[in-house]
Image (cartoon, rainbow, N blue to C red; front, top):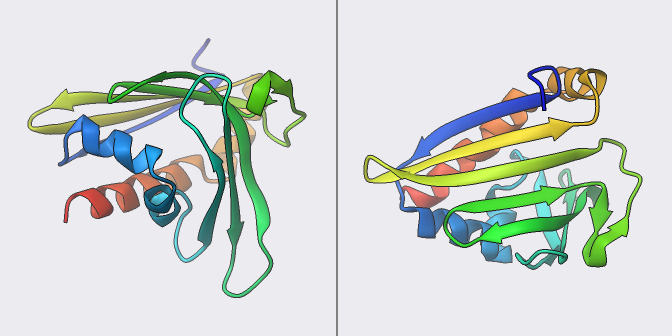
Amino acid sequence: MSAETELTIERRIAAPPAAVWDAWADPAKLARWWIPAPLACRVVRLDLHPGDGFETHMREGNGDWQPHVEGCFLEAVPHERLVWTTVLKQGWQPLEPWLALTAILTFEARDGGTLYTSRVLHRTPDDAAKHEAMGFHDGWGTVLNQLAALLER
């Protein structure tokens, strides 16, 4: 991948990698931080194994639930690395997402906590630019802050 197709964000979280992994693996915890507040998140499907599904919905206030992310896990190394894509859904079934991406998340033990890094790969430079213009750094940064707030209590 090239710099033109990749967006990256990272944050140190004052919690061990096992706690960060658990915040991903537990649907109730994921729902608390995965979408920027004040939007609500509902976890429809979450199974951290290659080929298994990942699906969330979102809503504002008391509105209707809307699709947020549907994808497939490609790799899951407990407490270390999680890779998922929006171009496949559970069972390796092809999808035609509105934004094709692959997210490579790493949880590196560092300074008594975790360096959480998200590398988000896009099909084209235009797709990466579109995602960045939509607020990638603000949105993904907000959810990382929410994750940290959940774990650093």
